[in-house]
Length: 260
Ligand code: NI
Image (cartoon, rainbow, N blue to C red):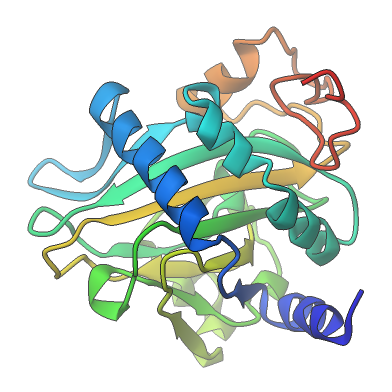
């Protein structure tokens, strides 16, 4: 690991997130951007928000719907950094293509990601958020509460999107809020326990990003009661308590898919 890389790991462990500039080349941004736009035209798009306004729209499990998206989810450079940050082998849990358009978009309220996951969260899970277009502040870039991943977890599963984090974790009001504008091809990695949020998109260009979730390679299935999350696991026939593995949840080091 180079010094730059160990610095990256150190910052990630301290802050609960980190930025990697130009993770994707301009050619890759074009390739994955084209695949993303195609998929948004063709696949089921889920809208999240209030009846009157949208927070964002997404294509769930896009790694199962488009080969380019699966390549991006298992991208060797992203996979290497994710495992260095986690300090252990990881598997792909899921991938979502996210669109946040102008006008109908609201800010994404503060939340953690871990509370939604159908595996025992204690080990490790993290997200990579890849920008496929430039995402300045006014297009809805992410902000993170630095160090919030270290706050004591008080039954994270009940932590709702938009709930004021200062109510759940009084200490969080004293943490720095770090806003991270990204250029196309840049990405952030964040611990699933890190509190984060985003502005609305107030520009004419659609915000387009892809989020992949990586989990501890030993993660086992623990139902959440959330039909989307549970169906996602149960579809391939995995029972509660069983390991999340196989083609559906591949190892990031590729050692379980040499045949692909
Ligand atoms: Ni999130």
